[in-house]
Every structure is written in structure tokens, then in C-alpha cells.
Image (cartoon, rainbow, N blue to C red):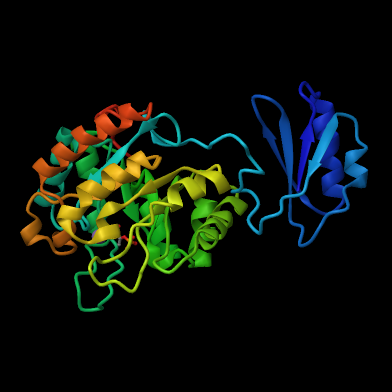
Length: 351
Ligand code: PEP
Ligand code: MN
């Protein structure tokens, strides 16, 4: 439920509403906005008796949020949320950042070469997994902590902020020490304990859609993170499983405008896992941006033939350069722009 205050309601009036919500046994989440302050009510299982709140001075409207997800819904917050992972790199506004890099961090030489290529091609952030959720237990599982240390070196070299995956609660705290944005992969989208943990950590989160998850499932997973007090969530469409083996997954482009309608959170697209085949990546990246994606995350490897994971879907560096050039044209056509590379000053990181 949302309690909407009249424009110009006083701080005392807002405090009074917060106090009464507490007396009723719920948690109050005041959200000052440009037009008006709204106060969210959480902690209720069913419908709240709003008569006492409706009568308080300054209250203009009570909105009962109808969806099972609350804080992620557009009803809850009509303005789009902008998630900033580093200075100058924001998702959800007019600028569209490109996150590029290899599937996995493999060595210092590889990740530095990839980071430089990503920056030179025009990417605004570097991706690379140190903890890899692989379908087979015998496949390369990632370098772990060493991989995070190498990502930190790559950030120092290029200034690009880091997006990297956490697979479990313990790993999330470690990843948070190094990453600018913590990725929750498709396989962990419904790992509720992990979602609560990254909610409590409070760093920006990139939440990927599960391969058999509905859009409502995705939003409910995001709700877990917001319910712990972390609103810095970027959603990601990365393809869903279908009956057709022609591609690895089917990139659900309809999810992009659908999520924008249902939620105020930004949504980006991953055409690499969404297709699984290198030459399908560029067309689908262009299409995703045209459909309104707030960013693109794409796999690029300096030597895809030697990649330890996902080489077949990884772009060569020159293909990433061409792609980003094309994405700039698409962005212009729809009144947006691609975030320039290297807007972040080179930082030493937290280590
Ligand atoms: C990845 O980004 O490398 C990855 C494993 O993605 P997903 O969780 O979408 O499969
Ligand atoms: Mn991958």
C-alpha cells in the first residue's frame, strides 16, 4: 500500500503518517519525489485497513498495490529508477551503457587485454566471471578470488567499473569488495537467500532472468532485494529456453517494454547468452536497444577460439567496435545516447 501526501506536505505531517504506520504494526518507507512524497507500507500480508491513515493531515490518496510484487512496481514509484554503478555509468536514464568482456576471467594477460579492447571499442564497464555457474561440474569453474584480484587490476588499468557474478552468500561478500555491480546469474535468480544477502550488502545488483522464469518471477526476485533496502537493481533479459534448438536460448525482446510497463527498474539485454551464437549477437543487440533496453551486456574475448567458456558466442574485439558504432546510431534514432567509455576516473578500488 502507498500513502500519497499532498504536494508541499510538511515534514511533521509525513512523520505523523510514518508513526501511525508503525503503530499499526507495519514498516514505513518514505519516498520523497519531485512532485509529491509517497510513503510505502510494507510488512503486511493482506489488505491494510487504511481508514486511520486516510484521515491524517496531508494525506491525499491511498493506493492499494495490486500486484504480488510491491516496491518494484510502477504503481509504487511512477518515475524510472536510475542505477549508477560508478561515476558517469548509469542505467535507466537517457544514456545507455555497454558492458563488455569475456565470459570468464582466465589470466591477468587475458583480462587486461580484454579490458583495454572493451574500453577502446567504447564500452563503459567490464564484465568477467570469477565464480562461474557451469552446467557441468567438470567444466572450468572460474579462478575464484584470484579472478577478482585480476579484475581489480583491469579496473586500475582502464578505469572501467566491474560487473561480476556472485554464486552464494559467502561469495557475495567477497565479490562486493571488488565489484562495482554484483551479478546474480540466471541459475541463481530464485536463490532467495542470495537475493536477501545482496539486498543487505547494498551494492548495485545485476539480476538476470532465469531461463524458465516468467517476468513476474523476475520481478518477485527483484522484490527480495528491494525488501532488504537495496533499490539499486538492474534487471537483465538473457533469453529463455524454448523448444527450438536452433539457438541456445530465445532472447525475449518483448520483456523489455513489458518490464518498463510493470516496473520502474531499468532492464538491459544480454544478446550473447540470449542467442549463444556469435553472428546472432550484433543483430539482437541492435534490436534490444531499439526495443528500449537501458544497457547491453555482451561477451567479447580477445581470442574467442581459446576461451575457457562461451567462446562460440564471444565477439572478437573488432566486432565489438563495429557493434558499438551501430548502437550509437540506433540510440540516436530513439533519442538516447550510448554512454561514452572512460567517463570514470581511474580508481584504486577498495583494495
Ligand atoms: C554469464 O553472464 O556468463 C552467465 C553465466 O550468464 P547467465 O547467468 O545469464 O547464464
Ligand atoms: Mn557466459
